[in-house]
Image 1: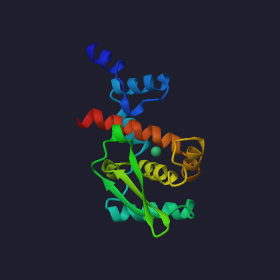
Image 2: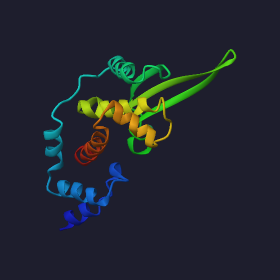
Image 3: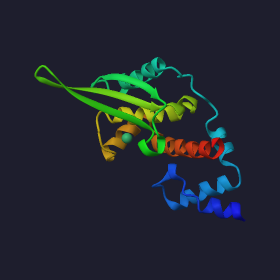
Length: 173
Ligand SMILES: [Zn+2]
């Protein structure tokens, strides 16, 4: 009973903002120890993109395909210092520098290191998200349309990636 009460009152911080009816279903899965199995069944694979070099090539590949004309990427790396709950899943920074008479922007993408261990869809989701920020700084309608253009299942993948983070937090802490 106590365990059930704890689960029902669980905040599910990675899923903040999703409808309560959906969160109730997630709590059910956790209560019945089924979340891990559901995720493994839906996402059985792991990607091989382990080095920063491989990540940069992968990101560049998606950019060439969908955002060829967007500003170039100066750097793409895995970052073990990203605090997922505080900073979101990845980071995209713009360093503005004056070079001669021009203002130059240096675009960097940092992906939280734990995505090394993720299913390929979740890595694709976070890379697509950070790439979309090359065009749209805000999380507005145009931003999510661009994400969906690059990854039609974007919204499902983001939700499921947050489920996966929830499951990791429950089992690895
Ligand atoms: Zn963002």
